[in-house]
Image (cartoon, rainbow, N blue to C red; front, side, top):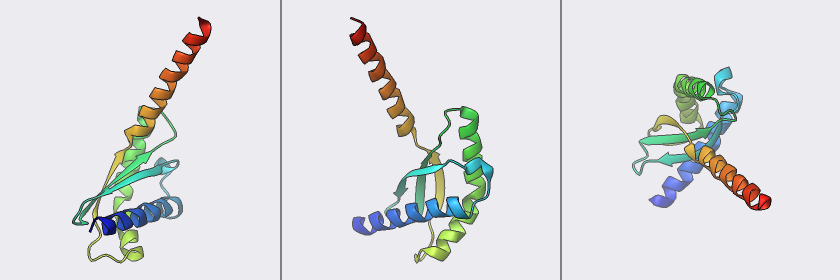
Length: 118
């Protein structure tokens, strides 16, 4: 069963990326990248993790609102593209790992600068 969940996750991620690029016309979701998908074992709920290029909190809030607004369109498009008995409920959540990775890179950069100054 886990193998099937993994395959469905990959398919949903590919299709959601395609839908965001080609079908969603909302300017708030431009620059949104789907980074991960977490599908429940019963295939009823999917959590879609995304990142944006901007570090501004206002842009993140706008992107979240845009994705929430487009949720119905995305779900109906998934229903047409993926053959599942029931299309899962979609929840969008900003991926904090990208920002955390940037923070770690900045700390390492500062550490190297401090060592170079010694």
